[in-house]
Length: 138
Image 1: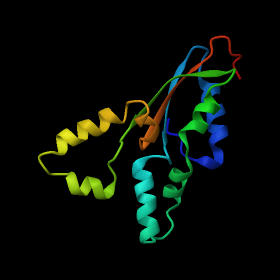
Image 2: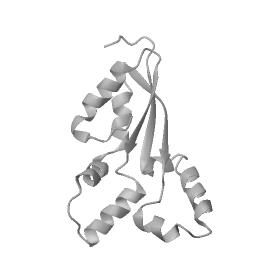
Image 3: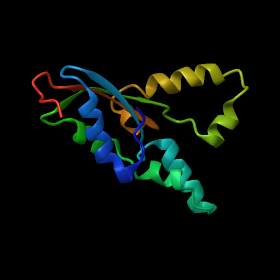
Image 4: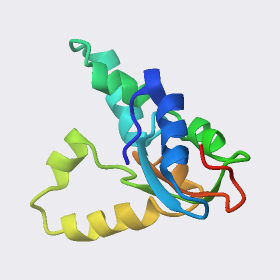
């Protein structure tokens, strides 16, 4: 499940916990407003203003830490976190794509983005959550 609507995030998180059976596992993907690609995009938009993009703004508002806290409670526990895409975004991708070094850079990008603490600044953040076995089904 992809979680990216900030105006309903608590409802979405509670619904995910409600549909999981006790001991059940869910994987949640969310954009990370702290990521290098998001921050580079923010800087580019500051230098050369563009029309407001609502989805882009939602992505910048999203902070992975808040979601981890929302899932780690008496109903559920966070088992693992992970990330993907450390440095690719429009301009860097256009610059590297098609070059001989692209495949190597791409592998490096995704390997680095899974390492702690770099996963915390990856563009997409993943939370593996398990409903506690003793949780009462809602």
